View 1 (cartoon, rainbow, N blue to C red):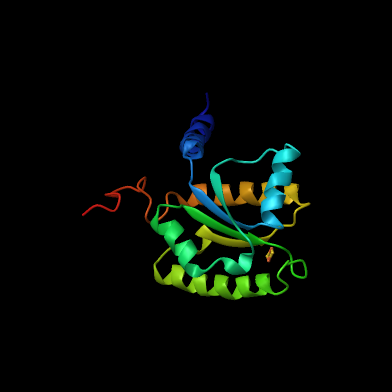
View 2: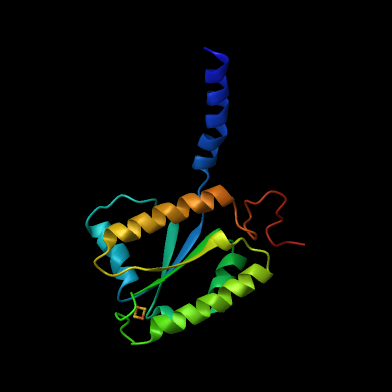
Length: 163
Ligand code: FES
């Protein structure tokens, strides 16, 4: 084995161990589009990473900053907010409201020192199962690269919220 092969092998080893870490991702999805998009991904058997839990809400406009902050407080490593594309919201302007709330949430998250990459907003329709899978895969990889969230019990030095 040449010295370069050893170097390559060393460079790959930490990445592999990082891949084994399982992130805890919360997905807020509107009932009519994004939740159905996740369902489409499942029904059509599109492979995607499974390290997320979906919280179904009737509309993305319902997702208040407190929901997202609570998810982080409870140990989420990343939070994905998703809803219908513009013009498709079943409550007409719900997703426009979601954008306003998301921007407020982003400001709060920044104030708390949580990295930008841990929070994401995406529009996914009921027919876009492949897109749902793509977004989940990308976001999961991104969270893996960032490591455990700020309030995660898996974070080094964490006392799991105990004094
Ligand atoms: S119903 Fe899906 S964003 Fe409003």
